[in-house]
Length: 80
Image (cartoon, rainbow, N blue to C red; front, side):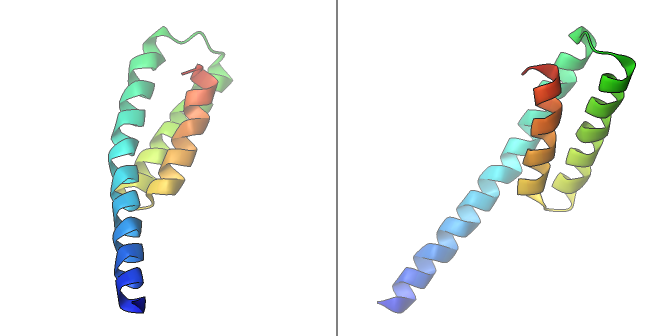
């Protein structure tokens, strides 16, 4: 019974990791689409672009939760 529980737990962990992996590109796409229309100061725009780039780097490194969290900061500044 313990082995079965372990297998289920590992499967859920892998599934949630894959879900975050596919969420990152969607967030990046939303940020890219909102950037041209954004009415932000130069400092805010630089911050959004920094978070966007950092989020992509984290995504490519396989750190999907960190990527989603970083991209969320950019989305918050863009009000999306």
